[in-house]
Image (tube, rainbow, N blue to C red; front, side, top):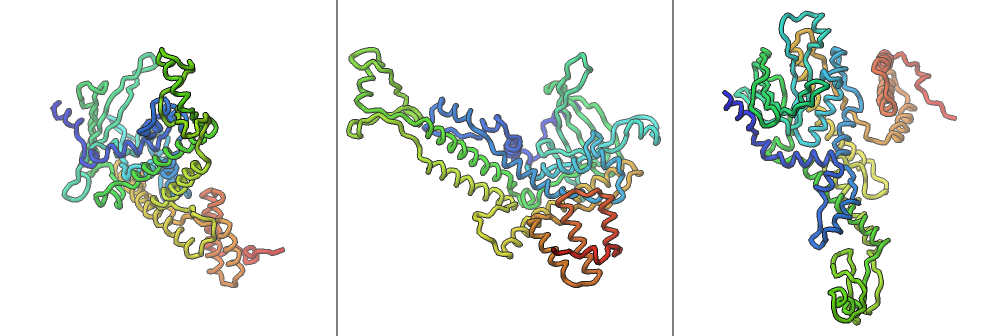
Length: 476
């Protein structure tokens, strides 16, 4: 049996093995910092070690991968999803560790952006004995939802019915032994099946594998879901975030070159005459006649070089021109535009020239469609979690989950001006209600409205309680 446990810790899904290196690189790019700069900065063939070390120390990282991954999630969750009939306590503590439902789904969404896939599991705390309402409340015995990156999902399989047969996740834990003893590292794997959840641990990371917990759930299904973007891994291809990271790496290296060009403009490269170099060499080598001046023979991009008398023979400093640096920065600007366009979030136009209304509408439609497809994925995933929680505890209702699908990516100023103009047209109560609904939507983009207050305003609009004179716009 222990041999079976050992094999359980070696299992890796084929998709996990094929993409692990890319996923780790994407995670590192999202985290950023000095560790990633050391990993991503490229040393030139002609670059000597001291020169590259200086460039490495000076380098800085514009974390575009993190900005993009978070931007998509922020757009989607800019308006809190509607969860009609949900248990308020579970909405406020979806993970049983203090994370709200929005925060768990934000984690899940960001993981989808970075890796192209992620998992959600629903677990019930282990307990023994009778369970009544008082004990449930006192010990907080209720289901909890957790998001997992694909790096933590080691293996899985689907049954003949197309549903998950089992799912295996891995986590590294520090087992607390009290305030007077150091924590012990432990490698843990959880096996979720259609009948039970089993936990295996390897103490110290390399010790024997033991089964530490086992509990049946009686759901008849795996209390988890695994979600991958259908336009990536769903067709046997990689995920677009790999390309995002490579473009971001190019920007990092270009920016490092531009920075060093600025440094070289301030501290130019020394060029000396060939006659001086010939006179200095014997003294440096320890014999013969010469000037006795010290001279570096190191040939590199930032070290002194020399030239013959035919090449003027005049010692001087040279440095890159400002044009070189400008060309690098222009290239980076182009890469940034392409970076956002690759993801489908391009809002920055290459020129400040006025766009046609058709072009603007197409750009906004492209972003809306990109976000709407992601919303479907999140909405279905959260609803499935509520269904699993209901399976664990029948007293937990399954709410009607609805995510926002109207994204205000247009210019608010022009939208409000257009709305004011629309309000001048004569129309019946139905027309004015539509204008009021649009105004409420734009108002939420400028300032978050309390859900209860928003519902009150919505009821007023639907019931036609807004007087016509209040809806008119006065002009001075």
